[in-house]
Amino acid sequence: MRILTLNPGSSTMKAALIDEGAPVHAETWDAADAVADDTVVRQAIERWGRPDGVAIRFVHGGSRGGPALVDEELLHQLDRLGSLAPLHQPLSAEVARLVRAALPDVPVIACFDTSFHSGLPDAAARYALPKAWTAQNRLRRYGFHGLSCQYAARRCAELLAMPQVHMLCCHIGSGVSVTAIRGGASVDTSMGFTPLEGAVMATRSGSVDPGLLLYVLGTGEVDLESLTDTLYHHAGLAGMTGTSGDLREVLAARAAGDAEAAAAVRVYLHRLRREIGAAAMSLQRLDAVVFTGGVAEHQPELLAELAGGLSLLRVEIDASRLAGEGDRLISPPGARVAVFTITAREDLELAREATALLAGETAGQRGSHARLRR
Ligand SMILES: Nc1ncnc2c1ncn2[C@@H]1O[C@H](COP(=O)(O)OP(=O)(O)O)[C@@H](O)[C@H]1O
Ligand SMILES: CC(=O)OP(=O)(O)O
Ligand SMILES: [Mg+2]
Image 1: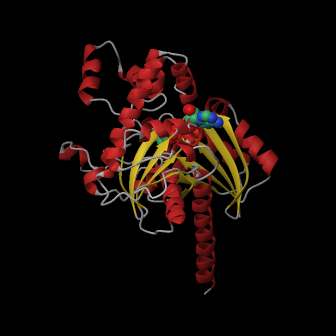
Image 2: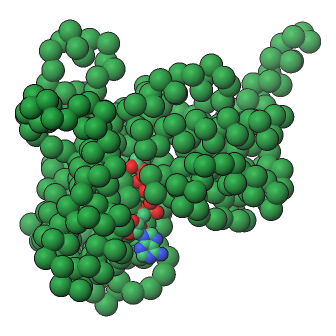
Image 3: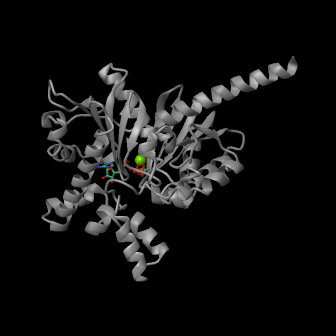
């Protein structure tokens, strides 16, 4: 089965063609360019041919525990979650509509970041808010980067040849999250109701004392719209440094002696270590730490800096192992905690979920036809 996968991230749009589980083509665009028109969809179809299905990453799926076939009704429901993930959800919905228009006979499957976390233990999923607010179980922690975590957990178990790994998945891209995973199940994660909670990100603030936000709103100098815009687009590394928030730019500024950039990296790493420490508390032991996502894959020297402050968890990195390509162990020989860098393969998870759903649909259709014939 040939599955075209589309992954609208906050800074990139990644497309890939996966044939029977094997990657055939892949390309990454700048997210901003991809929003403007149907370039990605058109080019992917023209160059790679008609797929049997198209799998699209939606970061927010609400309570859905798995993928779903896209129709207008589903898109309306997913549109309603748009304000909970403004950097991602509207783009995914737009891409889904473009695909449906370009390939009306091809099934489109929505795969959700939140599904991986849908079994979060109650204590990790709930906010301490009044019962009246939380009674419907909508105002809670959902968690994101689920497709990336799902792949990292699978790959880590494979690399360690160990089925019940207790691990942390640190996804460090434009969005940043830390997830505690026990035997393949998410047991705590740093992002919550929205992908704004937790660590400092490229343009997102991460967690801020809600009291500070109430205070700022109370001054009347900032309204809801501009506060939203600031927290999603103009905070994080971008806000602290005046750069785009791309770590390449921030690290270059630091190397050139920029004190603000140096301070911003200190905050970024400090807050990430805090999330790592917090997530570790949901595990009974720490077998492995996986670093994944654009920054983890391409900025290995930053991982060494990060791990320099993780000795309490016995997380160590062997600097001589940082150079190199592909999924690899980067902890020293004999280390108590296995540390890996693993390439984020949301494309493979998207294709896997879509193939399973389509195979189930086909089997289901055969079943219902057989029942009708009887
Ligand atoms: N080739 C590269 N070299 C260095 N850094 C990179 C490279 N590609 C990506 N990055 C880093 O990864 C970040 C984007 O991560 P990624 O996971 O691809 O983004 P998204 O959140 O859009 O999925 C960029 O901010 C940049 O710092
Ligand atoms: C959820 C999220 O922040 O995703 P990304 O890192 O791909 O922008
Ligand atoms: Mg991403």
